Length: 120
Image 1 (cartoon, rainbow, N blue to C red):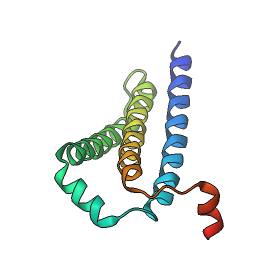
Image 2: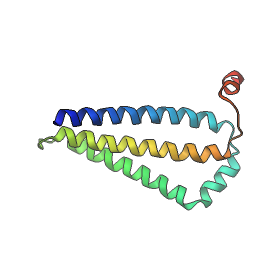
Image 3: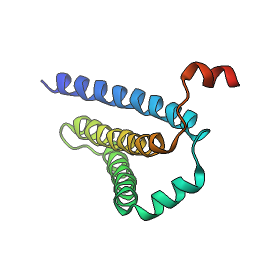
């Protein structure tokens, strides 16, 4: 039973890692076409965006610290706890990237991917 839970958590970690990579690439493309002055003003005045990002970074760091502390322990089923906190950390990281993607999408000039790739 534990091996199935372990495999499911590994799958969720891998999937969230791929989502994070995809969102990071999308953010990189969007940053080229964003009005930086509007974005800074919006991020500073929007308290919930700043608060959510602080929460995601805090949870990400806490989950990875717990993950590292559990790495060398001899607790029963420690590998499940170990993977669980790693999964939570990657989910927080993916949510952080998604929050930034949504914010940047509001301020970007609309260009297609083909135009973006041919401009370089």
